[in-house]
Amino acid sequence: MSEQSPGEVRIPAGAELLALTGVTAAVGGRAIFSDVTLRVRAGEFVAVLGPNGVGKSTLLKAVLGLLPISGGRVEVFDAPPGRHNSRIGYLPQRRAFDPATRIRGIDIVRMGWDGDRWGVALPGLLTGRAGRAARDRVREVIALVGAERYAHRPIGQCSGGEQQRLLIAQALIRRPELLVLDEPLDSLDVTNQASVSALIQSVCRSHGVAVLLVAHDVNPILPYLDQVIYLAHGGAVMGPPEQVITADTLSMLYGTTIDVLRDRTGRLVVVGQPDSHAEHEPRR
Image (cartoon, rainbow, N blue to C red):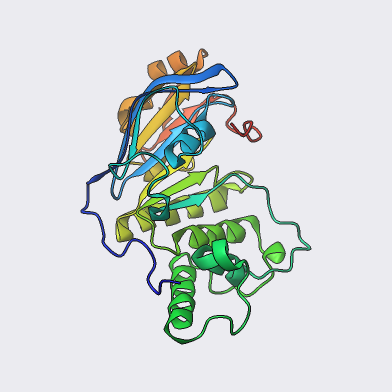
């Protein structure tokens, strides 16, 4: 096993990591979306938004090379999707761990280092420089997400927000340059949604990691975003939040009246957004 993890050579700030141009995707012969164009650059926090069934998770699968596209072009690190997945940290949709799950949080994090080869690492399995590198990196990412206090607990005894921080640490352990997160705020309360969103933005800024995050509800993440892409009715609109998140644009996309207001601090708030508290969309 290599003693170095991927991502040692960092991409310059602002470099384009991901490009979708006129992409069309279909599942089971049915078009999910068409003519989607998207650009994600190093250090950007980008959200993929929209109601159930519009293809948010499908878009992530196309980026990862898990689903062929029907038209257009996808480039990830200037190559076809799937070729450089070692440079991507991925957190799929999930349900909370069962309370009876005994594996520790620190072991969940460690699985991101070499779990594809070893599963849960056994004590003493890796020694020498390789073992030290793994242990040091586990400690580093646990500290990065602020999980030191509960990392040695069984994962089933951690709260939803604590579990999510540990899973984000797992996704970060191999120093990815692009972090792909599918519904990481689902089932979290408002306080934990805000704290996890702030954590993700902090990682973007401090480590130059680009983030592509799927969400139903824009409000918890809106203060932290650089760009949003809304999928609805087979099409998409992308741009900075203040340009895309308008009453006219969202009402057109959703086909119903959406209001966009400003709170007392001047931040945008989306009101009347369908499915903002809905269950997971089908795993497309």
